[in-house]
Image (cartoon, rainbow, N blue to C red; front, side, top):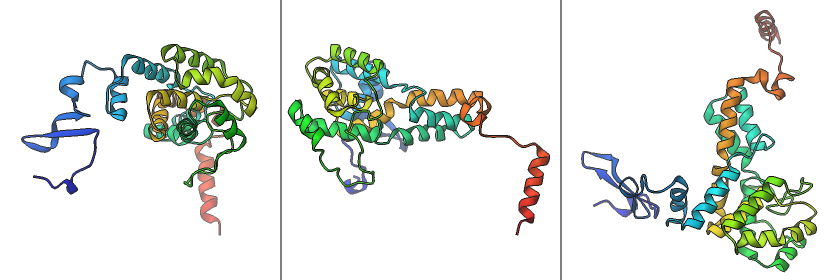
Length: 276
């Protein structure tokens, strides 16, 4: 019998080895469910994603809420810095893994990124649905916890560079509230104007997503990493597309890079070699 100290500790996953190969699983269980014997072909990817993080299958409303949010977040669009980072990587011929990592790295930040959502979700955990507490937090923000990130320069979940709440965000919030009325999303709908007026800038996607994740029962760490994951498909698709077009059709490179002919390149190398 294997010593527990020599085993990976996880409440998420359990495996039974193949009789002829201890390095291959004969059966895999996620929170007690036989993944390939019971779940495969019977649950959706969104239901399985919820199970991985929450260790229980979602009810129909929860599954619909998470799926609808996933569609809304799947492609932040070419204005988004994380998508542009992935596009840059694709256009200049970097590996596809590099494009994904670029999208995640830029999308992880505190300005509308994963870390912004992390703090917005912590606000929900700390303040709950009390408007007076939120207004007090706006006017007297709590000190950031000590970590490797720079202090936030704006109120979490809201866009300090925004003029008004974008139409797609308002449309998404309306659809999500229809699916899941009565929770944090409903409260956000009812109080968004008051919060935006107090702040002077509008709700952002991180704030909307934080309310949805709160309604789904995710904690701040789970919400942050899910937000990164759910926003990645658009970055991936745009990176592959720009890879096919190449840097000559990418505006930021076309105007800045001037390819050298072979003779000019040889002359440049010669001058570098002769330099003292």
